[in-house]
Image (tube, rainbow, N blue to C red; front, side, top):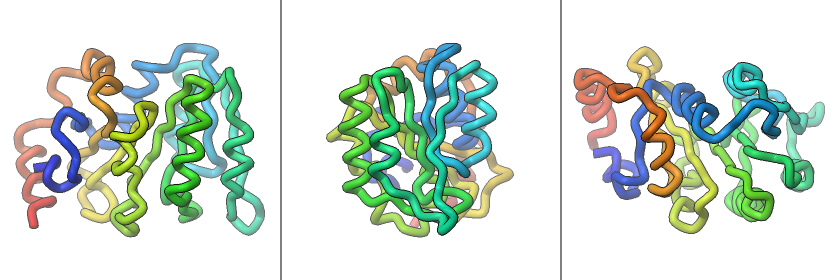
Length: 195
């Protein structure tokens, strides 16, 4: 049902206990102590929490006083020591939206540096045409996080999904707990995304 809803094959979908859990599993799988993680400031607070929890070297690109972001500034901040770049799109709490061209430029730069781009799309249902899920087949270094917490008003259900190429999800599947989503939660989630 998620495959039909998202328009991507099932092997590119991994269910988790909320999108924040998907982010945590990403850190557990791909990031080691001392690795450099680049993110926006301000953004989803859990990015900073997990980065500190796993002993990462934090680097951030701050929004200006008008809460606008120059994508080129973020792109130029990526270096060969960057392991992951994490952006919320639209960003929370600023509401700033990166265009597809900006996301593609970020993906090309992170690929050059052998880094992954994580796009947190918790609020993407408010501008679905901007979803980066359509870039998954084109780029092997993108991970998209989605949730039913915001637009579906199901935060207490704790249902999220991590979207990426099957080769990226394969090591995550080895790390994730065997039963991250109960059958009751899965049933309610399926009803929520039904037409």
